[in-house]
Length: 77
Image (cartoon, rainbow, N blue to C red; front, top):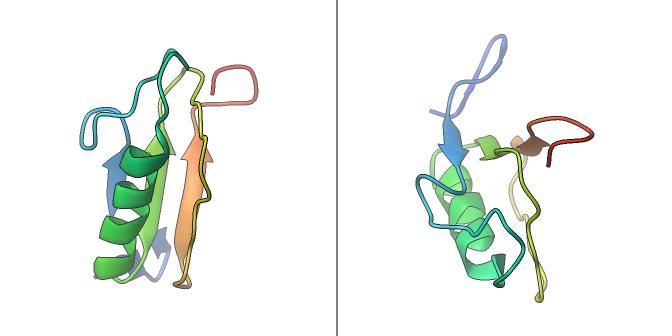
């Protein structure tokens, strides 16, 4: 499952696993939502945003507990 005693045990990289554009040139909404859906199916986990700028032209929906959106850092993603 996606959530253990110490926190999340499942992680998905939105760029590597779902093809999100880290340059901000194209809309990454579908890729990010797919990563959120995978985290939900795993029972929770981390949707990781590597360093970059992510353009989101649509609405993202998180419907499950224990789904965390986490970036590389304040000045990185």
